[in-house]
Length: 143
Image 1 (cartoon, one colour):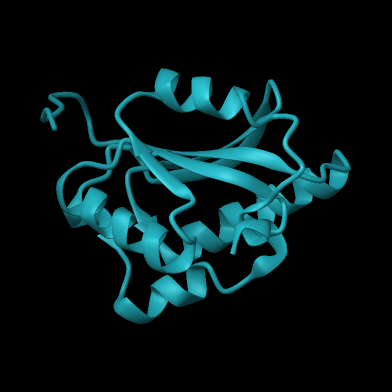
Image 2 (tube, helix red, strand yellow):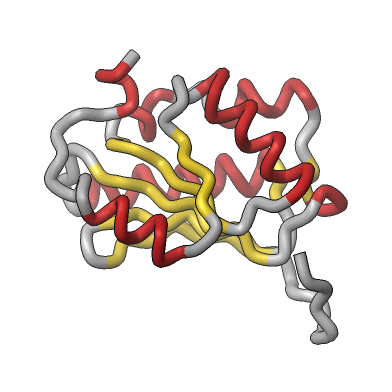
């Protein structure tokens, strides 16, 4: 991953829907609090828009192993709620490199039954997600 010469980015997170795809965006760091906050935002959007299923793209910006601030016990807490999982048709992650990518691969395999695809570009994730916009199957249906 290239080093940025610009000012450090203030940590932020948000969930939003664009063109039938849910985006969960993490900038600067990932903590259990950030993950749970984005999950609350995502569930609120799903309920507000009466969405049955939706593809999800997790976008990591300026995240490396130094600002991946999760402890081992946090991983199960981060995916313990099925409220969001019962609406996700598939999930993609963009921006995971090095150690962060390895951690994401393990999380996808153990907790999401291999329903997390880690891709190199946002365009790749969006192209795959568009194919599942009308899917009625969720990650939980596949288990």
